[in-house]
Amino acid sequence: MRFRADLFNFSPMRPFQILLLAYLLLAAGCVQYHYSPNFVQTPYGVKKGSGQVNASVGGSPVALNGDFHASYSPIKHGTVMLNYFRTRSSFEDTNFFTGPTYTHTSKGYLLEAAAGGYMPIAFGTGAMYVGWGQGKMRNDYGIERIADLRLQRFFVQPTFTFKNDWFRLGMGLRLVRLNFPSGSIDYRIEPADIEIIQRLERESPFWFPEFGGNIGVHFKPFTISASLVIVGTKPAFLYGFDGSNIGLGISYELE
Image (tube, rainbow, N blue to C red; front, side):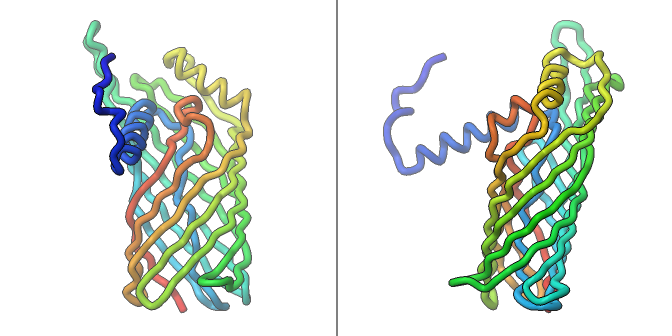
C-alpha cells in the first residue's frame, strides 16, 4: 500500500477527514450487528405535568434505525420515560468463485423504561436517570442460517439540557451494562461469525459508556432536532456492535 506524501501535511480539516474515513471504514467493515445504540434521550421537562413525545430516523452507513421516546413528569423534579428502538441492516454477499449470492440481514429491537430526577442548574437543567430494558437481535447469514440473541441493558445516565423559546440542546453520558443471557445459533454460519458470538458469551456482561446529544430548533410545540450517539468501547467490530447512530427527529412537547 502506498501513502500519498501530502497525507501528512497539516491542514485544519485533516483531523476531521481522517476521523470521517475511519468511521466509514469501521461501519462498513461489520454489517452483522449484535447490538446497536439508540439515541441518548434528554427530556426537556422542567416542571410537574410537562412531557415530550419524540420520533427519530437514524442509522450508520449500513443500517437504518427507528427511535421512539415518551417522557412525563408526574411529580415535581421527577420524570419517567419509555424508549423503543428498532434497527435493520442488509447487504449482498457474492461468492465470485462459485457464483451464489446471499442476502445477509440484521434486525432487532430494544424496549426500555427509566426514571429519574431533574434540577435547575446554571444555564439549564441537570438530570440523572436509571433504566432497564431488553430486546433481541436476529442475524440471517443467508439460506436460513440464523443467529438469535436476546439482550438486556441496564444504564445510568446523567444529562444536561438547555432551552429557550426557539432552541434546544441536550447532552448525556450513558453508562451501559449489556448482557446476552440466551440465544440460538445455526452452526452452519461462518467460523469467524461463530467466534464473535462465542466471545459475546464468554465476556458478557459488558460495561461501557455511550456519549450522545441532540440539537434542535423549536417551533412551539414542535422541535426539529439532529441526534448523535457514539459507543465508547473496544473496537466495535470485535463484538459485532454498531459503533454509532446519527439521525433526525421531530418531537412534541407538553406543557
